[in-house]
Amino acid sequence: MSEGGEQTVQVMQPNFVLMKLPGETGVEFVEILPFTPANRNNLIGWIAGRSDDALYGTSVVYDFPKTKVVDGAAADRGAN
Image (spheres, rainbow, N blue to C red):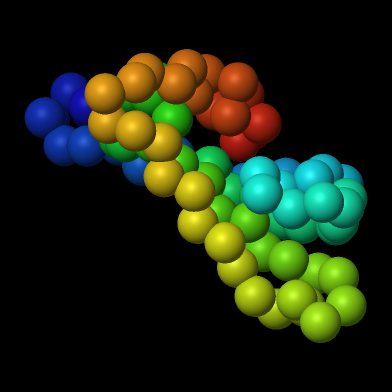
């Protein structure tokens, strides 16, 4: 939070990676954008924009369980 009590916003930059998405059998080129709550390090999910073949232009959203803390600090470092 800022000094005035307002929430600060940090723009997250996407990561372009070659990876095998959960539940898939092959590697594909995707754009990953992590989601973390404001002013917290808990990664709550991410969205993957697909770029290969018939799946071009589609996206997949992965939500992490609310009962599990996933450290989002690594994702935050990629935002600079």
